[in-house]
Length: 198
Image 1 (cartoon, helix red, strand yellow):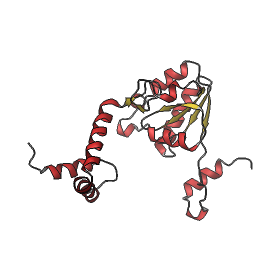
Image 2 (tube, one colour):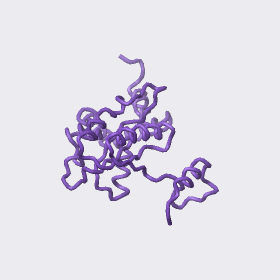
Image 3 (tube, helix red, strand yellow):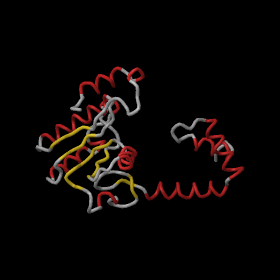
Image 4 (tube, one colour):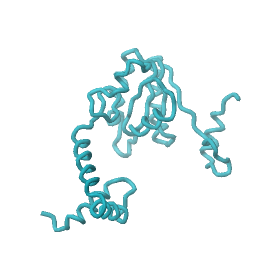
């Protein structure tokens, strides 16, 4: 049995969430206990269900409670296009922001040999098997513009290139509404080298 009070354990448990420090966790715990116990009960029920039932899609590796997610089983999606993203959150952002009608593959991270994250850890063996099926005609790389994201994109490009599959990369650079004086030099250099016809 823990020597911590149940309240301290609740506050400590809430700190596992990203961006939640001790003060925020304390505020959340007090709010739930003082003002919304029913909301707290509902949250704990849904949290327990989600932890038990949500896994990865056997096809694209996104988070789902189904064996194969709804996007992968949608007959109106274009199986010839495969957008590769790092996280399920990246997939959701793309799905909400653009009218992309192809399919996805979610890596669950990026290559990072120093951290012991190699190709198998991010499912590149599964991606390779998927590319070898012959259905994919274009791989769209939407990994993050970090050193690791670029290395991962290059690795995937090489995999696709070995099978004569077209590889494209989402554009990167100056954000809409951004002003050049506030954008870092590396972003400007990348945007300038990737410029296109106007």
